[in-house]
Length: 246
Image (tube, rainbow, N blue to C red; front, top):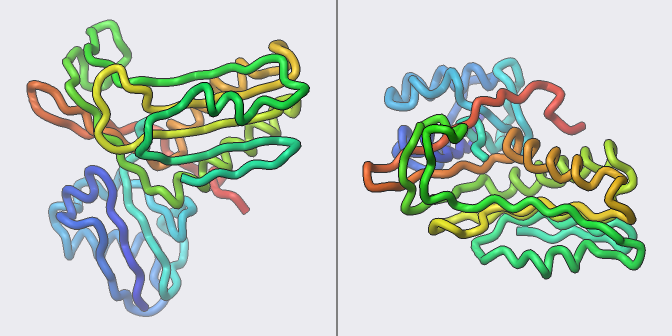
C-alpha cells in the first residue's frame, strides 16, 4: 500500500521536504505510519508526538486505518482560494496571496435586508510588548510568512461558516479570508465578517467565534521574522473526533 505524506511548517523543515511517497505493509494505521516516519526520518521524530494529522483533508487519529492512495498531511497545531456563495446566504471562504479588500467583501455579504455587519481583521504587528499574550515574549517583527494547507483550509473554513450558521441562524452573510505569503507590518492578514438584519442578532458573537475557531481548526501557520532570527508560531489546540465532519 502506498500513501503520499505532505509536510507543513516546522514538520516540513524537519523532514527536509514538502512531500514523501511512503509504502506500508498491509492494513496500516496512522500510528503505524508515524512510527515508520520516525524511523525513516529521525529529525522528524521529536515533532511527531504533538503533530496533527489529516487523511484526505480531514483530521485523523492514530487508530484510523489508511488505504492505498490516501493523502496524509502532518502539521503543527495551527496558528492562527475559492468563492462559495448563494443568493439567500452569501458565504465566502478564501485563501489568497492578494491584498484583502474589506469594502468589497462587506459588499459581497450585504443583502437588501442587511442592516448590520461586524468585521474583524487581524494584521501584522511590528512590536510585541511583554504585556501581549504571545508565546515567544516581547520582540520586534519585520515580516510574517503565512503558509496553508489550502485544500483542507478551505474545507475547514466552510465548516466554520456552517457552525456559525447553526449557532446564529439570523446571520445573513459570512466572509472568511486568510492571506498567505510574506507580509509586512501593518498588513491585514485575515478577515472575518458577518452580516445580519440588526446588530443584536448575533453578528458580534459570530465574528468572534469565527476568528477563534479559525485559529483552532484551519491549517494555517505563520513564521515570525525579526532582527533576532525567525521562528514558527504554533498553537496548542488539539482536535478531537468531534472536529471531523461526516
